[in-house]
Length: 169
Image 1 (cartoon, rainbow, N blue to C red):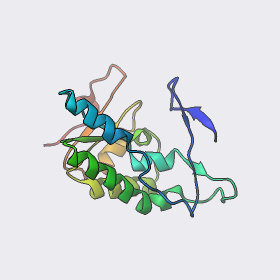
Image 2 (cartoon, rainbow, N blue to C red):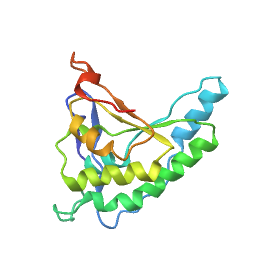
Image 3 (cartoon, rainbow, N blue to C red):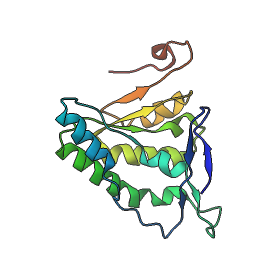
Image 4 (cartoon, rainbow, N blue to C red):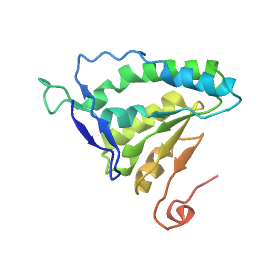
């Protein structure tokens, strides 16, 4: 599998290769185990996961799969796996779960923005969505119309986020 840079950082990640026959399963219980370990030590943390839409958008078609394959067509099959992880974290005592959605900084088309809206609706009231490392504020304003719980912004330029993104109550 290919390794590539994580946006404009010095971090790298292994690019998932997906196709229409990809079956998602809840295989690693690491995030829940680590949350329970921290909680047992008296530390109440917020578990952080790469959000489902960014996971799909940062993937690529597997070998033998048409390059035109829509990775977002897998959203309906990955959301229940995320829901299972969220349920396990909630059962372990997590009051908030954070989904990092870094692809919100990219120029997104209507189909991609609709995928974010679908994901937000699916998890409404259970998770906190975070966008970081870049602009993308127009995307936040678009998907934020369905968001009633919370969104995190990381404006790394020395510009007041409140001025750039008018938050409404």
